[in-house]
Length: 282
Image 1 (cartoon, helix red, strand yellow):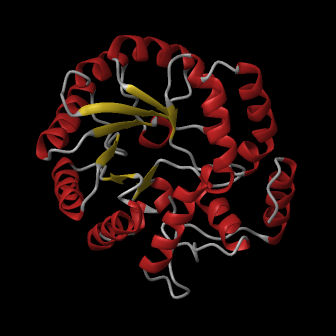
Image 2: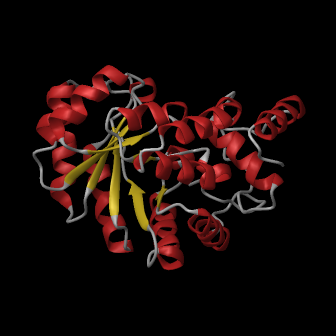
């Protein structure tokens, strides 16, 4: 979920609650706050805690609220994890430490320390394109032995690795790459942590339900219908396009925080074309 800001760039907690309710009404059974799409690199620790508390208050009785707590500093991540638990989060999302490129032994120690720090279930987030380091299959399998490490958000883009790791780890597996939502279901994933879900949740829900009920043909039709949306929302940074789409629909989003900047007029026109091709009008 994006983090709505007011016109002057402050945290918009009322807008966050309204957006959370909208997304759950549309069919999402969980929301991740303070993730990449929530502009977590540019929100303060206090803002992160306030956001978790507000979203839990708004929708926590009918959706799981998962708090992003990953940083490249294990001690800082532990502090965020404990604050998220106190704020009422139902689970934690922990991204691979970025920039400092730890070895696999460091990843094992990092994620284990976070999982040990609270009583909340933990979803790993494997995104080597951003972090610079993949979580290797053997490392994920070892982490899956921890009683509170229960899921993985896969943005690795490698269906072969995903197949092996799903089979060996037993973790609940979520697609973290919208273009691969359906392909990952075919090798054992159970759902999506989606960016495009801000604008096409009913379609994603229908695709998931169709696949899980055995109607692969219908699921494929929906996947193909959404291809222009998947492409359009990631022509530039996904947070930028998502906020542009939400603002155009009159939903809470607001501006971006630097270093992110808004779409140009040309990029906005292209986004409208892409979304319209997938059935979404701005």
